[in-house]
Image 1 (tube, helix red, strand yellow):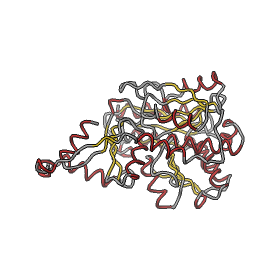
Image 2 (spheres, rainbow, N blue to C red; image 1 turned 180 degrees about the vertical axis):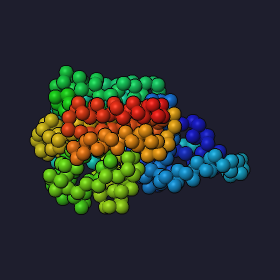
Image 3 (cartoon, helix red, strand yellow; image 1 turned 120 degrees about the horizontal axis):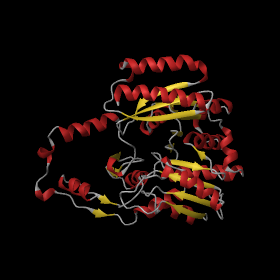
Length: 392
């Protein structure tokens, strides 16, 4: 924070410092204060050493690829020294003391006043990250009985065997506490993975179909359209068709989901990983806000989450992450392209293969869906070995 403060003021900017706040909280504050931009130091769902800077426009949206490329060119092109203002024009920093309070009020207002969380047992996993204060405050103020795990951040333990990427502790805590639901956020708070009362993990795909049907019933799902990604489980497309919804698959990345939502006029979209965007409430994915909507759907239906999750049949899916040294076009590597083609021909219409690089790490993700767990595991391991041999 201090480094960003120094950089912004040295260029004549006026930064407002908010301390530790979830990434979607920065998007909200940026737009509500009519600032020119917002910036967050974050590693998202990754380890602390992957920290980078996320930037939002004045309207609270993530920047486009083109805008990010322009920033890179500016920073790496050596032009910044020419743009430094004279000493009498440097900026001044301010501390925004009530940022968390403003964000908490915003989140609470997305939960219907006609519903109540009074007495509802909830377990939160804040991933030793940015939601560690805000999330417990939101649910406690709405009347829930809250138990919190992994809420002692020290800057190094963020996302470490906890949060939306590692739900083992949460699943155990939900069952032990007799809770109705468990909510796991990632380190910067823009993802949500849920756990039902039986300790089963509920993915972003399942969360989306539950919320989509609630919005449709209320007449708020524009064009009856749900935007997902190519990584979403095949079961999501089947569920959408079964329940009379349109489904569009975008490129992987919540930014691309948002672009397609805006282009197609959708108010709901997201990813299997738990990035879910409710455009009638916010400009970006927000784990706590998503939890508000999921709980609203549960309470309106009067059914436990385990029953709500049955709205979608989850196809067996296996995802294997392979560390790579470089990221050439997948189809340009003969061994990988041929292996993918072979598996696809054997799966036929009973499954699919998706091999893509991580957008944030030197990693290749191998995803296989098929008719059984044994088959998907076998093909995923087979493809992962080929990728490792070629690029690892």
